[in-house]
Every structure is written in C-alpha cells, then in structure tokens.
Amino acid sequence: MNTTLTGWPGFLRASLLMSCLSLGLQADATRPPGTAAELERLQGVWKGVALTRRTTDGSWVPSADAITITITGDSFHFHRDTNFWFRTTIVLSPDALPRQLRATIRENAPSQGDNAIGKVVAAIYRIEGGTLTLAARGDGSDETPAGFEEENVTRYELRKSSPAGKDAPSPLRPRIGE
Image (cartoon, rainbow, N blue to C red):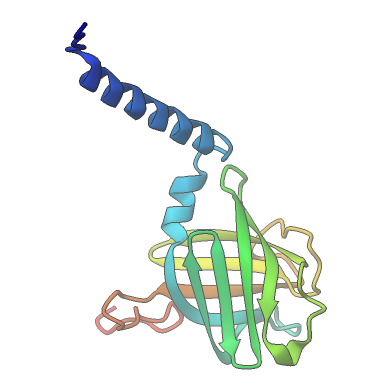
C-alpha cells in the first residue's frame, strides 16, 4: 500500500518554525522587559575618564587616566591600564530609575590579586547625547548609588568609539565649532 501525505512537508516546516519561535519566546521571557534593547544600546567600546568629587568645592575633577569599557553581550571589560582592569558579567535592571547594572567580577589584572573575583559592583548609568555616564560607589560597597551627584561615588564619562577606530570627541572637551 502506497500512502502519500501531500501536506506533510509544509506542516513539518510550520511545526518546526512554531517550536523554535516558542522556545525563543520562552527564553526571552526569563529576561525583564526592555533588557535586550537596553543591553543593545550599551554594546561597543566606550572611552573616557573617571571623575571624582573635589572635597573643597564639590566640583568634579577628571583623572589623568584614560578609561576604556568594552561591552559585548553581557560581558563588561573595564580597562584603565595593564595593572588595573576587570572582566565582569553584567545584569541590567533597565526599568529602575536611574537605570542600574550589577557587575560580577570574573577576572582582574594579576597585580590586583584574586580577592575581587566574585565581588559584585553596583552602578547606575545613563546614555544621553552619545555619552555613557556610569556612577559607582568609590568605597567598594555593592550598594547601588541613588544618583549621579551623590557623595562618595566615582563617575565615568565615556563616548562610544567609532567603528573605524577613530574615537568620538571626549565629553569633557568641546568639539571644534561648538
């Protein structure tokens, strides 16, 4: 007996497609709403400086060291120099205001020892006018800062590097013509 299933190949393709879509939706359902889009905005190489608050007059003072932050997926690499860098995994809380991230340190510069591995650094961030601003407590606390102007935070002002390798203008130096 020879049986022909005329609709089978189309049905099989549709079933497989629906299964894949269903699995994809279930996997995405584990992330809070907005996380994927917010994480996408952070992707890339960001360059800038750290700023600390001057105790005498409260103004923000940029450090002499250049900071580079590279974000790929949920991997966050902070680099100041060969003796001060961290590789972390980040988790976003994009619905919180201000926006928050928690970075778990996976690796750091050998000169720093290994006592930071596994520690969590909480930060707040915003992206405005092409500038990424991050703020984290300067005392090593894992407590999330309430605001960017808060006492005892280190603030980072960074601009995204262009794909061609030419850096965007520093947020602390005006562009020519401005």
